[in-house]
Amino acid sequence: MKNRLRPLWAPIALVVALASQAPAQVSGEVRDLATMAPVEGAIVSLQATTTRTTTAADGSFSLPGASGAGLVIVAANKGHYNASTLVTSPTTGVQILLEAVPVMDNSAYTFLDPVNCGMCHQDQLNEWTSSPMALAGQNTWVYDIYNGTGSPGGMGGFVYTRDSVFAHSNPASECGACHQPEPWVANPHTPLEDINALSVGSIHGISCEICHKVAHIDENKVNYPGIYEGAVTLSRPHGIDQVEYGVLGDSDVYMGPMRASYQPQLTAAMCAACHQDKNDPDEDGDFEEANGVISEPTYLEWLATPYADPADPLAATCVTCHMPATDATRASNMPSAPDREQGTIRLHQILGTTPEFLDNSCELEVKPRLTAGGSLEVDVSVTNTGVGHHVPTGVTVRNLILLVEAFRVSDGVTMASTGTQLVHDLGGVGDPALGYYAGQPGKLFAKVNHDAAGNGPTFYTDATGIQWDNRIPALATDTSHYSFTVPPGSGEVRVRARLIYRRAFRAFVDAKQWTTDGHGNPLEDVAAPYYGHLMEEKTARVNSPAAAIRR
Image 1 (cartoon, rainbow, N blue to C red):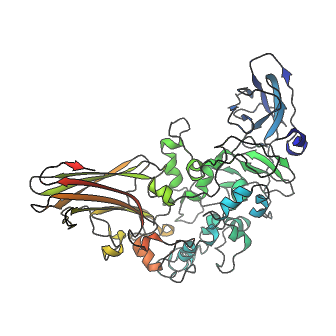
Image 2: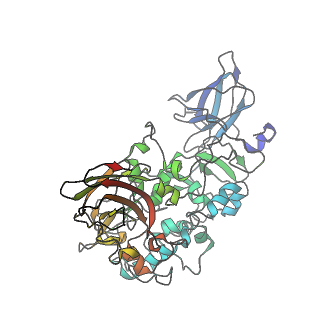
Image 3: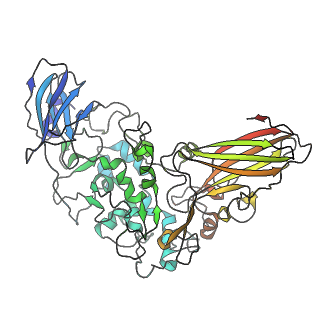
């Protein structure tokens, strides 16, 4: 930032800067403004760079690599406003005082319209506008499952307000806590709004301030659904002064209604608010009880992997993958915004099951061998190499289908399957040519819930247990075996394995007559040639009678 604008943009920080002849660095301490107690674990950064350190127990810090004049040094700590000072390096004795963010929860607060945020963050607004986050409040699949009003066939299959055992005792359910958080926060435990009469708040979906107003996530309550009171703490001011939380840790903006504060939970725990939850069978408002069944398992799946360990070479948060770094060098379009190092500003489109993600999630390995008796034995391995959680993850209707087939290269005649590993009925019972793959050589991967009578699959709101869960954890491999009969004289035989992603079980899709996803995009689940998204395909060949393999 330009020095001439600093009085408008930087919070006042008490600074004592004593020049020294030490090596080029900046050292000093960070303390709490009100108590003067040292602040341990605060981030101290050379603004707009990756040069940073953390304070010791006594609040002290030493920042090597910060060399030059007019350096903006920023201190940040969760629960405090960021604060900065100008120094010339080398210098010691720098003192930065952090002001605590006051507790503020104005229930009458109206979240800022994203368009207002776009006045300074145009790139982020443009990215977010077409994102699943922005469209969450208008998701037609959610409405079809909740009350059947999202699409013409929405009343088919399970409809919560008609079919759930909780339809009368809890008619609103908790859909709005994730999909329409602005109205939910203003009036908790209300049902989804009429899809034909949505408020501005519902149209906003998961808007800028739903995330950037989160002061704290109680990580002992990650199974609570959405922006749920007691699990998520918001900072909703009574006056015009605003706090906006972020993860850069070096923003010292203090201009009119906006003041920056560091919130490291925005990289993962914030995502758990809507991507980790249980149901509440006894309806006592405690979603962490053992009697609940996890519906969205993604956060805890990630937490159990090496990806969640900051010290592990594989370390990656939700943001690492789903908000990848861009080539942008400014987080704001304001002229006074600092130029940053590339790779420090993240995409706000926040995508998940796009072709790019799906195509880079798993690897297939096919190992065929031809026996002397004319049997083709095939091992197929699916390895979750590129995902920080199970595949598939998310709501329990998501599923993968592995299809395995063998045929003569000379004429394409299919070899008869003699194995017992077959696609489950949830892959669709009917004509395989139309994507009904039940009974075909292969395997369906899913998490299947059951209801109180033991019947499944059942929608998660009514689940009392899990029938089976064979999804593939991060870095894990699933291997399945297949057998085919190869008639004498068949010559070269080709084996093909295909891994297909589906957004919902086929019978459920048919019951709802879905041809688009919840955001209006064409639904691959019902489209030839794969009737789902082809994630991976691998082939291998064997020559009869030898087991020579060409790939």
